[in-house]
Image (cartoon, rainbow, N blue to C red; front, side, top):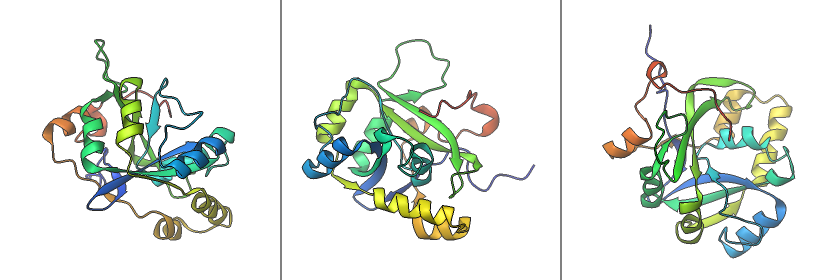
Length: 209
């Protein structure tokens, strides 16, 4: 069998020398206040439940329906954080489908099928989602965010282009500017199963959290 060109688990993200961008979707009130105050610690936001961040733009578009899915996902936020903080969160994680039955880590990593640029098809490799639990969420929201930008209009322009029949290649060139994000720490790679292949992950069905 020919080796798959894209590794089964691979982090693809928009990043520069100083930061990495992750995405979340919120309702209008939370999103507007978060952008205005440049923090997620605004009225309506809660650290009581797990909050999921996604480096993949396409996966965010799929989960939020390009911001049209429902009122609670009507605004897409691009959240920048340092590489150090991003990887420190991964250090505190465990895999969602792990069979481990002891005390769970405060952060959960989930690998879900990446989507095509139209979001209508699944690709044969996975995209990472990171669920930040209560024990870490407040610190993340307070101390780990560099900036917050509302990118809803970009999401909606992409949706319009999808509906107009723009090709997968054109969509990717216009909207997806991610690169492979390398994790050098062998311990982090082990924790998040970055080097796993499809046959040995033992993953169950995606929960699409």
